[in-house]
Image 1: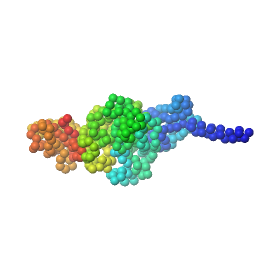
Image 2 (image 1 turned 60 degrees about the horizontal axis):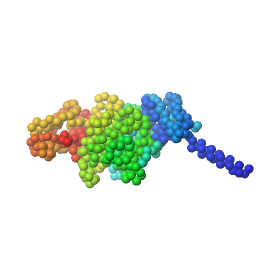
Image 3 (image 1 turned 90 degrees about the horizontal axis):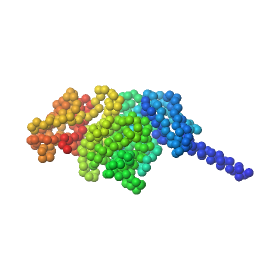
Image 4 (image 1 turned 90 degrees about the vertical axis):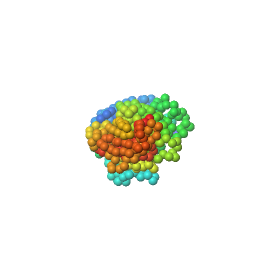
Length: 472
């Protein structure tokens, strides 16, 4: 009899443990305060008892969506979302017990990824402030801008979940959030008047191959895949490890598009970078399965890389990044040649970075007409005697400007491969170049080195011309 009395509490305890473990579980990205992408079928997934039936419903329409968990307990549904707005909703998931997510908004969601210049928070890095950061933080209280940061995770195998939570923007939460992503989201919110969700996943110093799925690297022998833990020599640089740990857990979450700020760590392999960028973007789009979503990115800023390993100046990787926009469809590049930070690899002008990315999104993704969003690009070059005329792809009026400053960063090349400083003058959308040292010009270079900053800008947008060369 005493044994039975002892056994009853033990059975009760087992029942409690079993019941708790059998409750439906959602990945971290599905939680209170999240924002769901508007006017689409968003995926919602999680885990329950094997073969159990799961019901998911949103308070915006009262509809229920059902799924059956597989043998491992994984389930997934797709549910329709309405037009975005400021009404908070709930999302409920039921399998035995009900899990209810509160304060859910519907709006525009963007993935934000890259290396340290994307990771750099609003409060800055040690000794490296964000220009205007304190004022922006003080003014950041906005319950309609929501932010999620994926915790750093380098993994040999793809992960199902990550650490993180959705937070409303405020002076408490924005200091630790990506500055580039925040300024991007703030501009979208102000212009579109709709909630904005920023899904941030970046790691300082990371290489592009670390963010790529194994399938995207299969025929790139320069980037061998790790086979065991000992193969992960660099936690943020080994192929696939950040995709496995920081992209895979949120892969499929409803997004409008992605922004990207990376390239410094791959500056010594510009030709291969173009191939890997195209592979990564194409592969992400395929895996997300929401169409050819827009992908906007920052061209890296001028910086003195002397002493940072093999000498390959950053003009080549900036050139490669410009080629990415030509090769990979539905992409756009924000030029940061006026970052004015030659001695700090983390330019403080993150407002420029975020807002220039937002210009691309507003014009190309959201269809805002009349917006200048793209830096001027060289359209053609004419050589007449000693004179070189460059024409850029913007209207002659209002054209280009140097803001009244001297233009010092043009060089003219001769047949022997030498380059000599040029005298430059602007008229409309043209730049006229001459060098007394070159009798027969054949090519031109502009800011094509590590540190030279842009001196010419579009009048209507004040966007800088990127570094370029006409020789190959």
